Length: 225
Image (cartoon, rainbow, N blue to C red; front, side, top):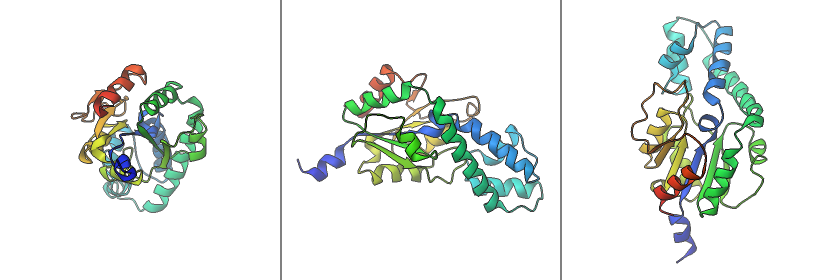
């Protein structure tokens, strides 16, 4: 079998680190609430879910600004929020659950390529995975979605790393990311939290309770490795 075919048929697991492992939704809500309030908007968790949930950051914030009839530099506010969010994620890495590292190592041992997507500092993320592997790769999240990754990010992550979407499993933290992964033809395992429990997780394959050997077995079964 040629090298090109080997790469084409390799299985992959793509991890939405910020929202499936780190407390990204809680951090994003707090940072956004603080900065939006400072900019003159009235916000709370309910309004954020209504105007930002499932939307691009730009579209959601523009809708909120229009509803409250404010004059705000939306691109500047988005940029400020993204910078603060990335810094907070990087800080939160010190409390990242240790079981995710062992889980990733178990998946790698099965010959599956693992892609870690995050807005945290990439070198800080890499430092938490002490056993380098050519099959362990890290990618900065470029999604325009507010608190989720859209189908284009999942597809881009697969294609950029010589994977095919139908041979990938996505580890996600929201119902919106479930839909993005499914739309790009991936399987989806999801970890809910109190801020995403209202979302539609239908179509997801496995509800994640722990990153353990049982979940690694489920990943292997889905990918048939």
